[in-house]
Image (cartoon, rainbow, N blue to C red; front, side, top):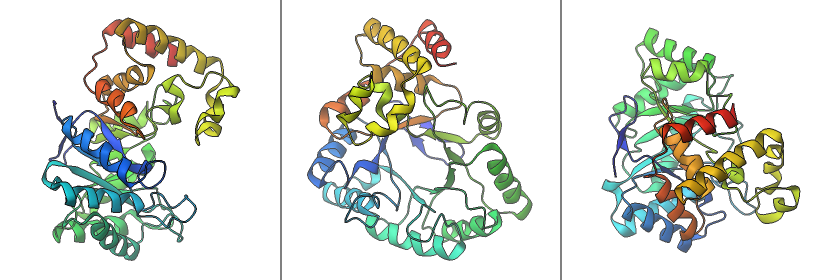
Length: 314
């Protein structure tokens, strides 16, 4: 499968990233192993997780996803084939924290759970307004020099926050964020399109999108409030049930029929084709869902398809 350069990181990734938030939550260990086996067999090579996954599940404390990924890589001998993205700064009981001490402590725990010597891409999960960019970047600098991480990025930063971090890195001679992970999909475009996208393209920053299927809405399985009970995420989908959401679904329906594909595959293919995006993140909890994601990674939309989706989602 064709790989894409991820900004200036030196990493090359397949056009679809597996979202590991489901591991230890809606996918148990055996299911997670089966999914990861198939994902790797398909030539896909990047898995996204975070230390906080999945602390929201009763009985979990965070780190469950990293632990499963680490056990899978060790049992299958796949470490050299995979690019692992994980994050620090999500709320693990100390708030959204990018203080140097928290980064230094968190990376050791992630390395241990993942059973690796180095993390390929380490992200600041959320902005921490209480901690100066220089403190966080200096902490990453130490980890880069120690070989514990290979590259850094940020998630959920807006254009002003990312610009400030880049300016600090340049002024202080510190490593910069080379990857951004924003929420982005056919429905949720405003947060990335515009100043943030322009900045990433101008600065050659790799972009990996999350909620790429709008919490499942773009799969087409939620058409009315009566459908919201189909999954644990149904409640979050209610906000998409409006005139614009239905317009996007209608466009997805038409283009999916044309290609003999599923709506989710078309929605992901649109992101993959989008200038200024390296790859979308998508999750699966069954092999059937995963096969659809794999298909999306090699699906090509024509200019008419893209124009129709652009118009519907504008």
